[in-house]
Amino acid sequence: MKRILEPITYVLAAVYFLVDAVFMAVAMPISRWIARHFEFKRLRAWIRSLPPYPSLALFSVPVLILEPIKPVAAYLVATGQFLSGVAAFVGCELLKLVLVERLFHLTRDKLMRIPAFAWVYGKFTEMKAWLQATEAWRAIRALSLAAKDCVARARARLAESFGRPVTSRD
Image (cartoon, rainbow, N blue to C red; front, side, top):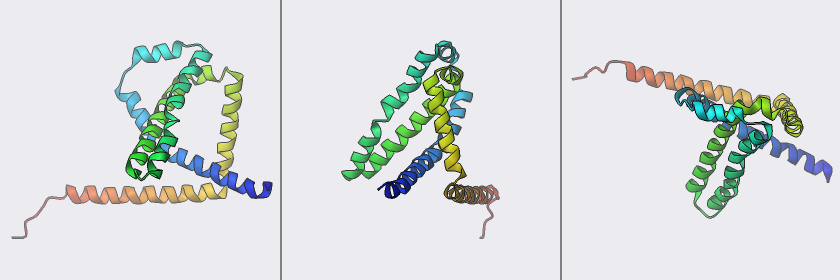
């Protein structure tokens, strides 16, 4: 039984981390853009002033509020409301990741003072490193980079075609 479940567990973990990586690839630029364009000096100062355990409580809020929307999104998809379900999943996942990333950036040092958090974060980092070292991850990463390059070239060609002066064929 263990020999059957182990590969399934690895596949599920890989899919989870892959989806998470895709969302983080979108969430990180959004998070950086928000940090550059919106000055929440008082809010940022208040968050940084929190001790470790209140920082952990604040860090947990987006997860506790937005994570339960995943089953709701699955229900919507299962009942034929595909677009609503996908929109709910994508929107809430991006919002959660942006908020968690911003809060982690502001409270990382304090969160790492909590032994259990530091241990879990260490295990998460180890698991992520292991997954990224697998052949499957490298193959998916290479495909992802190739797709990204293809989109960038197509975007450049499109921008170039719109940048040319239009000539009349009268």
